[in-house]
Image 1: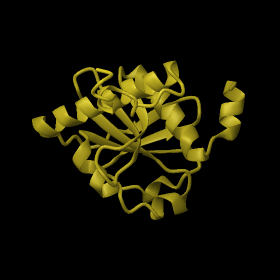
Image 2 (image 1 turned 45 degrees about the vertical axis):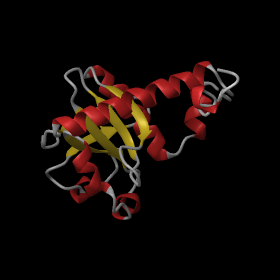
Image 3 (image 1 turned 60 degrees about the vertical axis):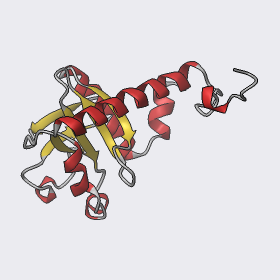
Length: 162
């Protein structure tokens, strides 16, 4: 799929996440889109910084998208900094002041307001960093070995095949 085809097939929030992920790299953060930090939660973008910092970015494409989101306060317990990513037409006065603000498009982004820092507890940081690493490795595995299921592995082998 070409870049143009990808952009044409993507939803507005996915395009914002793409621009945010690309921008986080300029801050030496690696990012995963659509990440599950805990059961029942799915963040749009999670970034892991060079010193182990964890940022969560929720991408909102319109007022209704923001107003219908009731889960975002739960994400605060899973990051050091929390951000909203919106396009330049979004009414940013709706967004809480204590959260970060990123203006983005499908190619890049700009951090307009840094979110408040609330450091994660070391035990939660360790669990989340491990989950981030495993998730990233599984995505890479899926790209390099299409059609090979994660379920296919040592636990799925019969005792005679071991």
